Amino acid sequence: MAKENRTGWEKFKDFGRENRYPIVTASWVASMAISLGLVSRNRYLTTSQKLVQARMYAQGLTLAVLVASAGFEVADARSGKGKFETVLVVDPEDPEHKHMIEKRIHHESYSGEDLWKGLFLVRLV
Image 1 (cartoon, rainbow, N blue to C red):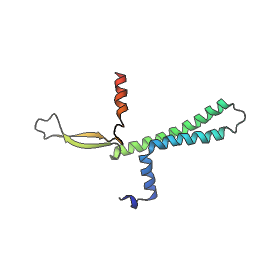
Image 2: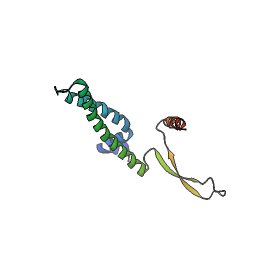
Image 3: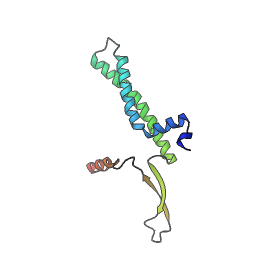
């Protein structure tokens, strides 16, 4: 379906799917600001207690947003829309090159997106 023929809800879902991690970050910032505003009204708490309370509320909302984001990630992986794609390739161990095997290919959003994974694995060894 062409982009101009999509409904508002479909455009909203596509935007959320493409920008899920900036949305998680923005939700944390917004929830921290809102919860600080709400908690600051309590005159019986000290400033440090207010910060801890606001952080706990913001953490709860951020965790909920992360769970929703993980749900989108799983749904994308199952439907083949996400960063991984399953393709058929020739089995390298088959000398006649007649046997095909499935291989998952990872698509990076930008070049070098997954370089940190190699660095992390090197440190573990």
